[in-house]
Amino acid sequence: DIRLPSQVPYHILGPVCLLDPTMLTALSFRVANSTAKTTCFTSLRRCLSTVPETMKAAVVREVGDAHALKVETDFPTPTLKPNSVIVKNEYAGINFIDTYHRKGLYARDLPFVGGQEGGGTVAAVSDEAAAQGIKVGDKVAYSVLGTYCQYTAVPAAKLLPVPEGVGMDVATSCVVQGLTAHYLTTSAHADLIKEGEWCLIHGVGGGTCQWAAQMAKIQGYKVIGTCSKGKQDVAEALGCDELIVCDEVPGTSYEDYESVDIVSRVMEVTNGVGAKCVIDGIGKSTVDISINSLAHRGIFVSFGNASGAVPAFPVLRLIGKSAYVTRPKLLDYVVTREELVERAGDIFGWLKDGKLNVSVDTTFPLDQAAEGHLYLEAGKTKGKLLYKID
Image 1: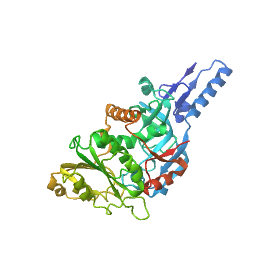
Image 2: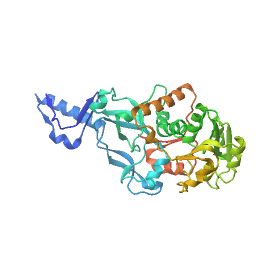
Image 3: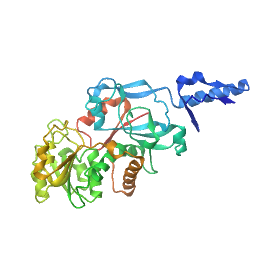
Image 4: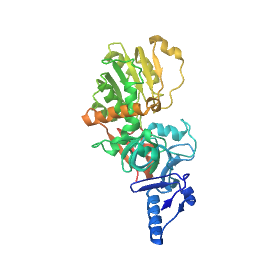
């Protein structure tokens, strides 16, 4: 028989066995004969090779531009912890928040693996996760820090089962952008907008706000979207009630928000009322437009910094319309497992019902990690960006 000391963390499910390699010396085997011994150790090696000790990962060791993201082939694979699983990633999502981490705008301890959105197959399962019915081979999507890599340790409570008929690329796209758009259009506005009222959403030709425009319509809001001329074709397919098309900043794909008097157009479209909710992921270039476009007791939801961080402004700016402002983040809107599953259930349901369409713009191999960030930061995207991970 085989005896393992109780202090050695291990779990075996089907073909997968994951042990902390540093504790292998603590293993004590009593094997009846040499044939059994050979078979035992061959099986152990096979199990351990399923989740290797090192992996390919896109790592930030010093904050900086896109080239600070370096692909390493010998980065330590995460270890299996209680109440968690190891996911073998197939895709990782590329999001603006990843660039904020890389640049140091949102500080993280160095070094770190980039990304916080992934999807793939469960490769190893803790006892606690197994007790919840999670199995090796399950298809899952999730959001935790450190997804630009082959393997990620994920708390079981963070896993989203991928439904039949939903591709892994689409499922991975749902996790950050989809969940962000969901909380922006259902919760972040604190119910200050009601069905039939106007919602202004900037940058609907891009990633997250393509989702947000569609979800706002599902909620029954009337939607005004802004976009650049280069993304007009994408924006027109979203069902916005009004689309304000801006010129592009010379040499870029970004909207030139000074090329159109957006505030005047919003007031014209809303008969002088303004927007009860403004969803703004652009940041520095649109903060004045967003505040000035608000209706009486409307809310400015600032969730991104695509053009730069929103500068500080005096709260007295809001007094004219008794307006509200919030700066939310996704993690505060998926605090419990129940909330996460409920939001994801809405999204996957809308996808299956044809109420929501997901556009994957470009998929980069992980070896081109810097190129993925450069593409995003150039404002070129007309949909979701992903890394394909082999």
